[in-house]
Length: 354
Image (cartoon, rainbow, N blue to C red; front, side, top):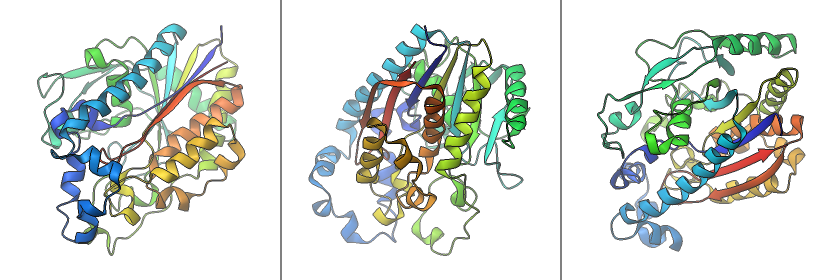
């Protein structure tokens, strides 16, 4: 049996909410007075988008979208359970959560031990009840491995990767939901409370020039018209190189390691050219085709400008996974791309094994 497993999945926050709230981001976007009325006019939307929006602003189609996401998540969880990892390395973006104005590291190993984390802070902030009907202050335990995280960081530095590390979560800040929702969704039936595996999170500055400028989140066009952009995040090629280096470190261990890229791809609220109304599906489908066809050199040549223009900021987590699967020679067992026009982002899933 292989010593390594690769997983790609989504951490779409609104999956933790009810169907009634799943298209809430688009409803909010359509109230932006600086979006041209013609862009808001349903008659000008693609037919598939009008059908998905329906007569109830996406409430009816939310159940279908949820079912497709859960099918992908359960395939990922089944692969993890069969593999029985000692540790799960998770690449996830920090969306103005642990890292803010004081410091924005390109990459950071979170060297934490077990941590009690509120499960629904993001949903509470958006006024959505959680789909499980649990109390707003419900917490889950994220099982960490600080010793392994410290060893990984040291190994990466010796390998030429100037890796940052953190021993303590920022006080008063949300825990990065890309990491939290990885556990929440892989253990969806129990709202993350019965997940038995240890996580080793590695945050990626996916939001780059928008990390502070937009506080890693939603923005009105009036707010971004004269925004001061931040320095860029790491390039796709650098993410591949870091993913390779992390995989190399674990090659020399006797651990069974699963590598997880946690993110959706193009996000509507980041796709300025599409007026934040829908994700850039053609851009996602092009990169997904390269992924499936294992045209990794073409994938790695994707530029930061292309990523930003398509609202694909969070795809950088997947480039880290691509580096790991190349380094380890893992092969794709299964994958799918769940596309949508009204639920903010397109969501890929994948399973890779040796």
